[in-house]
Image (cartoon, rainbow, N blue to C red; front, side, top):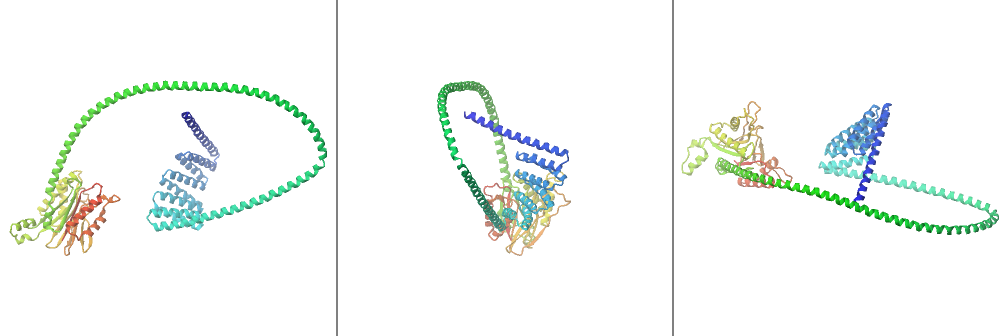
Length: 635
């Protein structure tokens, strides 16, 4: 029975919706017919009116595209008769449809079109309302500054009109805009004005209601006075009638005696007829009870018979469905068994493939580990650097086992310092000429890529730097980078291939005897701190290697005098670009430079530890996105 009632309810609802849609479609056709009628007689004003009615019906039916189409059609005919109010309203309605559909760019576009027409009409309240509409749509698009520009003009008009409602609406939007822009004082000021105008509006409405109530009370009092006067007039009339009937009272008494005799005879006849009717009613009632009992019994029998037949049909249908389901289950079981066999075969194949992949992965890992050992053997140790620069550190943190970032240093001159160090260790003194003209070249290099591809590039860069310095191309730091650029392009054949790999380099040539530091950079800078002031010397905008559009690439040298204690830092971009912190943002250059300035007076090993821990804490659970290299030294 519940299912029966649910079906009836669903059917009723369907019929109701169908009736509503039929009525709406009939209304559309009626308005379309009216449009055609007025179109034939060139009454464009009425034609536009019926197009707007069709648009509103489609809007009610939530057929927004059709509504917009008919509003725009109406605009064409309104423009023919210069009906600017109709054009303005149509554009405003289209803006609201787009806003309801969260298409705020289109909503703003049509609101602006409506505003153009409002300005032509020249009604200031209408212009102000149009500006507020545009400001609202812009606020929803988070274009708060542009929204405020429209509100500024709206405020001027509303103030001139002294229209509290328009002013309240403007300051309400101002409140949201300034809050979103982070200008909390202006937001609070706007909210205070909004509250003042809102309170004034409520007070005006209350006073208006009080005046209306007083007028209603006076109307009721005057109506009551009229009713009292009418009642008094009616009483006077009745008194007059009463006096006229007193004279005919004696005549009426005679007539009453005659009527009472006739009434007594009629009552006797009525009592006799009532007795006969009661007897007939009793017989009819008895016959009706018997008839109703027989009908009720037949209905009960019919209901039970219907239920039994329905149950038999359902049972037969259920048996048929069950037979079909059993057949489907049997077929499905057969299919499942076949699928199981296929899966087992594929599993065997996958296990074989997995073993092969596992072996290949092991081979790759072994190769990477071997490459890691080669790279570690290639790079000199931090202790070797301290032979030349006792106050120094190297922080290298590859993203993977092998790194695309690498450091390189070498002493040039008559005799390398490490050689002198070994001679002194065995008790021999180097010649005086061997102590002159010595310089230390130190570089931090970021190769294209990271991991294995980056490590291959690091091998190329490492060997090329050794070759360039061994051949004596060490006139200046820029001279070394110029030759490195040509060597990389030649080694990778970048003039004749699509290879675009390169290196970002920060290279220093330190001449302690003459107290000069010569720096040249390919995209990467040099930072030094002297007398508590941090200075950045930017590298050239082009990398070493890679695409070359200019005819010849030349790097620039920057020479610094080493006349005061100074801390120097060269680095790659991995530290600055790491995502982390509470908001998952990059560490950025500003924070890195502030950290260097904060720690530059500490011993170098402490600086290295602070930089490492800061990076670790900033990164947190985030993945490391690039290789990290920072070199610091103090002279």
